[in-house]
Length: 428
Image 1 (cartoon, rainbow, N blue to C red):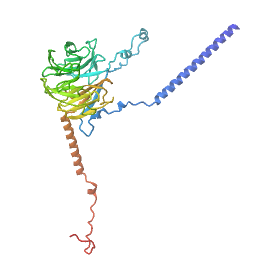
Image 2: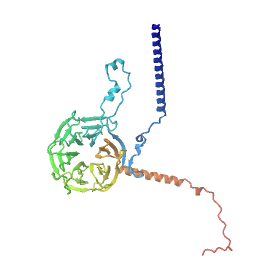
Image 3: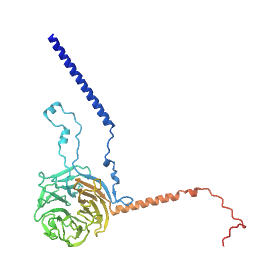
Image 4: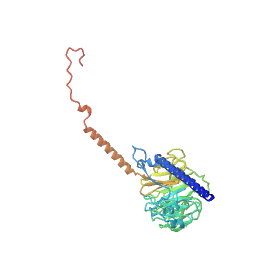
C-alpha cells in the first residue's frame, strides 16, 4: 500500500508540473502574439532628415540665381554589415569563435569629435584634422570610405589643428601642443618637420607658384613664411610678444587662418581684431577690412578663410556660425548658415576650404561633422539668368499667339447713330 501511494504521489506531481508548463507555454505564446500585433500596429516613425529634398537646399533662396548648393556631409566611419553566411556550427559557438556579424560589431568605428583644419588632395579626397581623436581623417567624397593617419600608429600627435596639401600631395599638419608642423609625403610617410620658433601654429596655406608655406601662429601674433620644400624660415609678419594688443595695419591679434589667391596675395583672418588683412607675395600690406558686429556683414570671431575661383573671399565666423562672402576689396556680397544642426546650419563653425572644383568644405566642433557644398561661379549665375529670361520670352511668345477671350467673342452690330433731334448735345 505504501509503495502504491508513493507511485500515485509521483504521478500527481508530474501532472501538476505538466499543467504548469502548459500554462507557461500558453502565456508565452499569448504574450508573443500580443507583442507582434503591437509591433505591426505601431506606425513607423519618420526621420525628418529623410524627408528633406537636399537637391533644393540652395543659397540664396529662389528666384535669385543659385550661388551655393548643399551636397553632403561627413562625420564617421561607415558601418558595412557583413554579407549573410551559413550559420555558425555548435562546435564554433562552443569554441567561442566570432561570427562575421560579431567581427563587424566589434570593429572600432571612428568618428569626428572636434574637426578643424581641412584640405583636399589631387584625387578629391578631403582631409580633416581632429585634435581630440588624434588623427587625420581622409574621406572619399564619393563613397564616404575612410582612411586615417593615427596618433601612435602613423605619427605622434599632440593637438593637431591646421592642414595644408601642396600640388604633389605632400601633407602639412600643425600641432599646437607639440609646437611643430609635421610633413608627410604622398604616401603618408613622415618626411620632415618644422619645430623651431612656433608656439601655437594653426591655419596654413601653400603658395604652389612661389613655394611658400604660410603658418598663422595665434600664440605669437605672427604669420610665419617657410620654404615649402626646404622647410626653412623665410620671414615673419607681425610683431610678437604684445599679447594680442596690436591693432595697427599689418599687425595681428591671434591670427587664425590664411589663404592665397591666384595672384599670390595672402589673406589672414585677424581673429581678435575682427578683420581680414591682405598682403602681397613679398609680405607688403595691401589693405584690411571688417569690423565687429553681431549680424551678416560684420565679424564676431572670424576663423576659417578661403578663396573661390572667382576671387571672392569667404570667411567662417565661429561666433555667428555663418559663412560670409566678400569681394577682395571688402564689399559684402552674401551669407549663409546660422545656429543649428540641419544641413546648411552650423554649430561652432571653425574650418573652411574651397578646392579647385569649387567645392566648399566646412568643419564644426560641436556636432563633429564636415559639410560639403558646391559654389556656382559668376558665369554659372549669368547662365541661370539668361536661361530664365529665355523662358520668360518663350512664355510671352506663346501667350501672344493664343487668342484671348475678348478676341474670341463674335462681332456685334455697331450701335445705331443718334437721331438729329436728340436732346444730347453735339460735340463741338
